[in-house]
Image (cartoon, rainbow, N blue to C red; front, side):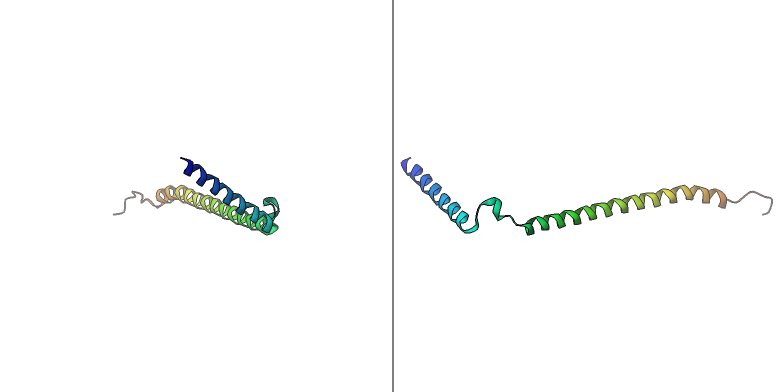
Length: 88
């Protein structure tokens, strides 16, 4: 049991040294973020929003086109039906 506690203590010390070394080399976490990171996120978000809008517009266009064809089809069938005149 004592060996397990020693191992955990050594692991914690190693992790703490790694964190201190990273802070020394790269600075604090909030200082590590650059404008470039945020610009990439912004561009990705804008592209995703544009694609979502294009999909919505495309679906709306196709739905409107199909509705228009469905409304025009019964009118074309009723006008093209032959009339029973007396000509064989």
